[in-house]
Image 1 (cartoon, rainbow, N blue to C red):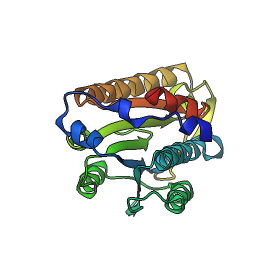
Image 2: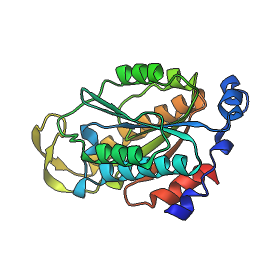
Image 3: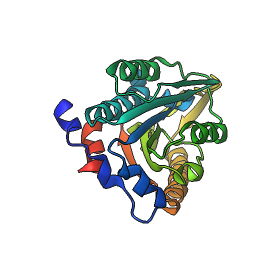
Length: 233
């Protein structure tokens, strides 16, 4: 992972025409913020892979900032809780941030995304290279943040979320409420689910395009480092 981190070059992410980009890249050191969105929908699939993958991605970006001698800030939003490192170049803070993301219990939790992004906008005083990491399964508005920062959305999904298989009779459990439902998960149910998810993702990508927000999707069975490098090399 160390050699791959050395290939990450923040500067090519600049979008010409946005006035704050000159300020962002005029300084010798960038302000890099990695923000993680933790809610119950991350608790999906075997062995909590979504939260583990999200943690891995956040940690890679944090170490890349440290390697590039840039100021790193890690912010984690979870149910009624905000954890933030100071702007730092110290590995200790990166390790604490990574530990917090990994160990947060997301079951039976929700996020108020409007409040989250208002808080984040107020916290980040300097124009920053801002990574927002989550599963983006709910409607999210990053327009306010994009006015001030270079925003990159990283979407973490389990492949079975997007491409479910026919299971027949199955017991489903809602990770937010813990409610259980006996149902029959067949082709008709899958087609309806896929249609809604595709429409949700289409609107999300339109939103990103409207505000010049770059995005990448990383599945839990993919090499996170290799996918991240596509943004920077």
